[in-house]
Image 1 (cartoon, rainbow, N blue to C red):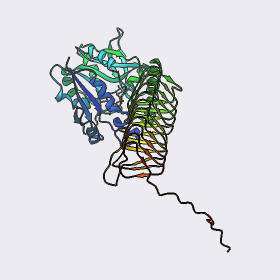
Image 2 (image 1 turned 90 degrees about the horizontal axis):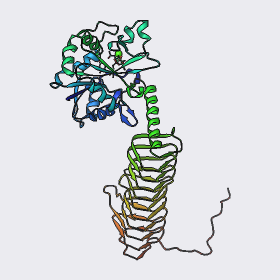
Image 3 (image 1 turned 90 degrees about the vertical axis):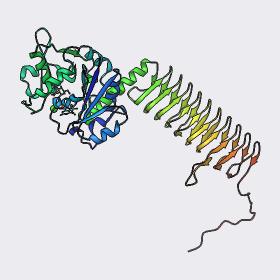
Image 4 (image 1 turned 180 degrees about the horizontal axis):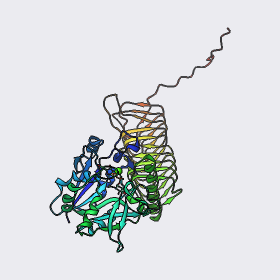
Length: 454
Ligand code: UD1
Ligand code: CA
């Protein structure tokens, strides 16, 4: 089957009151339109056309590398007019699937069912709603075939009572759309060219219309306001939490976790409250995450423990490491098995070897740290001279005394010791002791100053 997807994203999103086009607002950390594009791409070899209007340049820029075509709808004259902009690009014999940039959680499975039902005529995705206000109602005949869709503003009292509504999502042979769309009229309450009017056309030509009912209202819900965006966000997070728990993860409170991207967990992972996961995060067996942590694009191997209030980004963490509380691991951090990074420690582009410890109040950046190294409290790698970044190398089993400044580029050999308070500017050889601080002087008989009389 040749599938041409048309995604409508030209509307202004007035009710968002935002400078950002509505479809670029995120749900679960991912712009709504990106979610729709990602889902469409799951359907196979699809051609995707996005109809844009308001904020067109921002949308183009954002998705420039996604291999989708953009067509501009200069005036928003209705959903039928919007789809008509894509007609010139329909491929021979294609089935056209119409999606919406502001209906972000639609599932590939439902779309597959819809496409299979649209071989010879239109198939539309509908949903039953307790409160159908605002939606087009699905009118079926006695035998259950879809007869028409009546927009709320055009509906009489009987029609308004129908609870099955149009999600707007539909599939149909492209050739039929190409024939019907130019013939639409805008003689209706909103003066718009309604895509939904093709249903009536189909019925009058004796081409049956199939209605596929979506099982979950969330997947066909649209976002028109910040409040709806927030509701959808909560619903999505609730689903994330449920599937994590079903997969064997302990969530101390499923209401207080946010996954803005994808989180993969092995068994017996435990996550305390208020944690945020961004981008792609994976947690190995038995990993424990304390409260208030932010993890972004990182992998933590089995048995690692992250204590409260830590931030980990762009890092690769080995097995049985201990991180935090209050640690900040920046991109390029790699911890080998059993390494420890403690409170108020910042790392960046730092490889820290097996069993090494940076326990307190340090900055380790642009550094290669060997195994079983001990880095004392308050140690700083001075990696930046105001122009260039330089590397600090520390060999296995070295001991760096507290409050040491390592002025890079510099190396400390294996087994070396650096005395506390040193400013190290030259290489320290293996097993040497380096002390680089002024010698202590004790002055006997020293008189403290006393307060002057006024
Ligand atoms: C549409 C359906 C309605 C359905 C509802 C579900 C029509 C006529 N009605 O109504 O049956 O219940 O969706 O949410 O199709 N858009 C464009 N260009 C336009 C007009 C719209 O790109 O010229 C985009 C909008 O940005 C929006 C989407 O299409 O994302 C829906 O348009 P809107 O006018 O809001 O349709 P509804 O009135 O919600
Ligand atoms: Ca409308």
